[in-house]
Image (cartoon, rainbow, N blue to C red; front, side, top):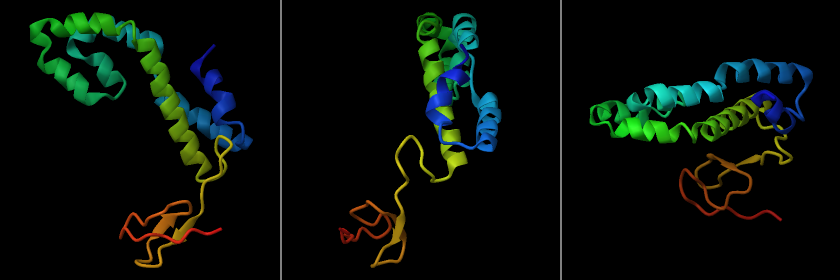
Length: 144
């Protein structure tokens, strides 16, 4: 079973067929493979390549800097066992982001996006359920 089949019911249930096709095209480009992640951690873990693969560039760079010590080789071997879960989490985050971009504020995951209102103090846009304006900090009146 592919990772796309796992994300299908969750992220594409309320999409039109066109949006679903768009989602799959984008997800195919953004998703990562668990086997590739494990192999990168096993064979190139000492250089942090498995972190770069999941766009964790800070850790990848740290591993690259300390690769001469040998500690990163041991850590890379250990992290090979955690890579399938990390790849699944990465793919789930990508699927959620892509679905959110495609749906653009429509109903997503059973919850509707809150409408925006204007702040009475500064005129900035504020999420409907917010208690304070993120721009000026003014308290917003609660609507019943």
